[in-house]
Length: 304
View 1 (tube, helix red, strand yellow):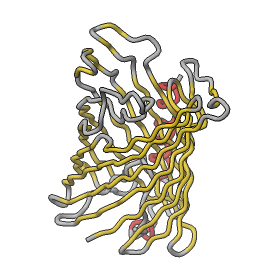
View 2 (tube, rainbow, N blue to C red):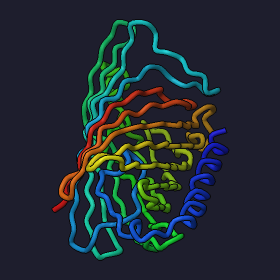
View 3 (cartoon, rainbow, N blue to C red):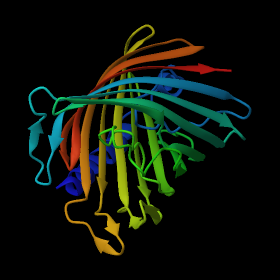
């Protein structure tokens, strides 16, 4: 089901880029470059100029209201149970040339769980990401801005030997190096900017508590739109989609270990030429074998 959703949404987004772009060739759009923080998760296609550095911290509060089972049915947490998380992310981008950019992201999180009258708290690093982005085509009339991306997930989070008193929440990663390849599109259609990306990732084999483990390959896809409506303000809406296959443990497929999710996120931003800010809300609306989360986040971009 989720693969069909991903295909349909990406198809609609790409079609929208082509159809609407052909209808607009105004000179004012050609010169229109409003600053913004961009969507939350969806990549923006333009890369940094040579020697330019941008830093972007993110502050998340995540509340788990329940889980989605293998059939996609949502179940609330039992009465009295509670699960939430504070997460701080640090993201940076640096232009090596006017077309080539290096970027990275680190995560620190604090997890809280109350379950069956027991409580646990764990904190530590999440997995780290390194990125290399290359501008394949700058935006021209009917054509969007197109950028290729290579990403590598680096296992800096704890992924085994769970603490007996931590109820499992001290496990914050999966221990796998995951290379991924993808493409990013951006198109300006005044007063809107449209974004879309898709990345295919291939996990590597590792041992988890002595068991040879290989996670399923996965696809992430995102679509986002920004609407610039009043001076320095803009509204943002995005959809984030994820689908991953089953896990193999010692060569055998683990039943019902696949996962998928659909996240919707509205937000509002304020920006000027030096700093760009965004306040947003995220909600997991569909899923299989994943948590049903609600999140509030704030971020800003600062350029040097």
